[in-house]
Image (cartoon, rainbow, N blue to C red):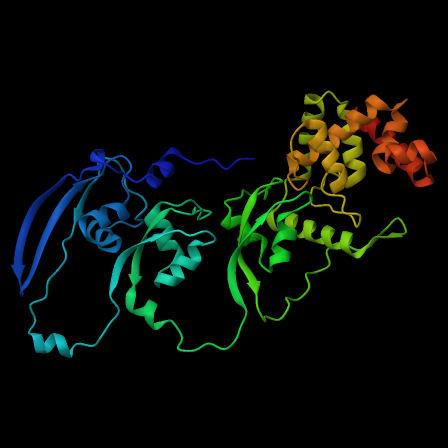
Length: 400
């Protein structure tokens, strides 16, 4: 699943540079009233222009241009549009009167070079502006995705309020910083967020991840809001997954990982059961596996519910545990993220394909998916495995 981006929004995100973005300005009027001089100019919008860049080059502000042109949304301008560019004003009030005027914050546009771990919300707070204003001024998408080294225009930055906001003294508290984390086998965004005391949403936003929260082994993630110091430990997460299944109690570490994975799936959302059923069928055909077999296993395992996670930490539609996911990754020649709907189905179908090829018959292959091929060879089918095989074979007639 990809998130489409319109050519128009991409165009608004590109800043015009070099001679191709030379301003086409023409003075049209100069009037003088009440001791204040106004020199309004006109500017014709070109490809790559944004209101924030026009404001920066002309020494005015996004809000001033918006007011002068009755723009309801400063991020929506079009090529060829002619904008009125209001000039700055110079007051000629007597010096005594100016000295007597109350001190107010100076509101200007600022620029900010993004550092590793920074988020739009933190930058907006630092400059006394809003997330919406920063997003609009820089043509960011709905995720407010930014990258280290990117230079942002900060509209309405309040210098006075920024300095006044700093407390004279602060009580000892936990320090909130950004950390980096290199993804290892078995990691999930939920587990990483829990480890660093932050949220799944914060990690997704800081790294520009899509709705699937897909990560890969070896990837370096920025973890915003990582907590250190003397802060009290966070309250335990809700127990979304129990610790027993089929009469067996699983270790606390396995159950904790299962709960973290469940939380991740709940947080990012999953496709519908109908969508997952179609994905299983299509993937099986592509990979040369009987679709009826893959559909029967998926239905038996999860009922096509990709948000399903067992106490054994079997994940998603195909209920694949992390160690089996690593095996599946080797089978297909690339890392698979079991939280990702497509990768989860690929993992399950790859395992079925291998079991069908290496087993003496179909019931043994099905048993291997549930009990493990080595255990089946060594111990034969357990009683619950025989029930599982019978159920899957019955489901196959339904999906044939």
